[in-house]
Image (cartoon, rainbow, N blue to C red; front, side, top):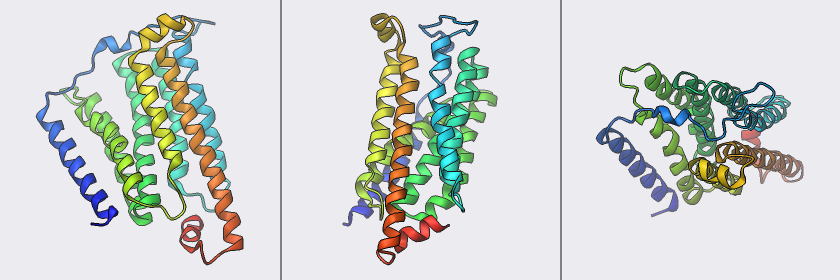
Length: 265
């Protein structure tokens, strides 16, 4: 069996298991103690100062990404949306940490689903199928945003749908990177991003312990910074890759014809 077929089977099985698990476990309700962050210090009249300010690396990375991809004559919408979503994450998460509550948390998680789903569609486009990746972009974003609306406005306040949206792509992307081969991308940038995501989740989990140890900054604030660094590395890879591809297109146009079709659209 070819590697791609194995990958398709694994993605399907993972999807079935994820959906079945969602329906067989009890509803996940937002714990209100989640909003009680260990580092709640105020500075220059900004409550939860470090948790707020540590979001602004997202703003920088997102802004740089949007500017870079909008410079193209025909900007690829998925990359623009990815970095636009990162800008919205900075704004939404900053707002949430100013006024932590389940109501403001909506504006933190909503743009995060845009980033998760857009990134997933990009990986599908680059490794599985350009046409499929473009086809699923907006449906995936719609599904992701629906998971937040279902949690925020549904009677049960259930987070299972959002948990599926957040974690399935993070499990599916490694399968795609292993079992599918991109015509112009080795995937190292996505492994780095996934690693930064895992480190960020660990920092978030040990928020209190890290704050007690370091005293000047908490695990939650470091989570924002590490995640932003991972996204910055991804942006730099995109820039270097595009420069290399464009240079090779000039030198060996026939060898890079699949890439040329991607970049020209």
